[in-house]
Amino acid sequence: MGKKFTVKIVTKDEKINVYYNDILKVSYNKSGSGYYFKAGCYTQTNISKGDSASSYGEVTIYNLQVSHT
Image 1: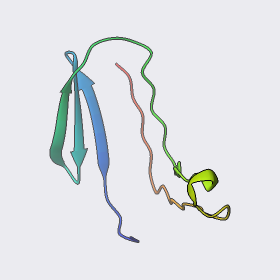
Image 2: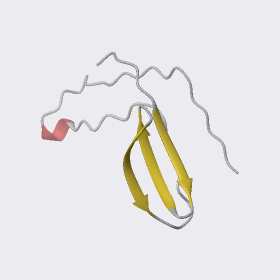
Image 3: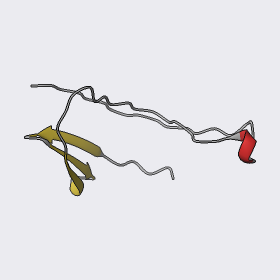
Image 4: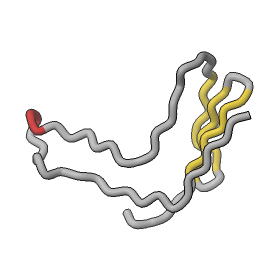
């Protein structure tokens, strides 16, 4: 927590490659359309399963670049 990191998602030739700090971590063979990208904090809390109603997540985005070719 509190450490900066870099995530890069590259899609090309029906592949989705995900890099963490410039190291390839996962590669998916995927084709299709309608995919989207979201940046932020999306907590998965559920008060009906005992999570606190005041639960929260916090994210600071220092730089975000999106490009399409």
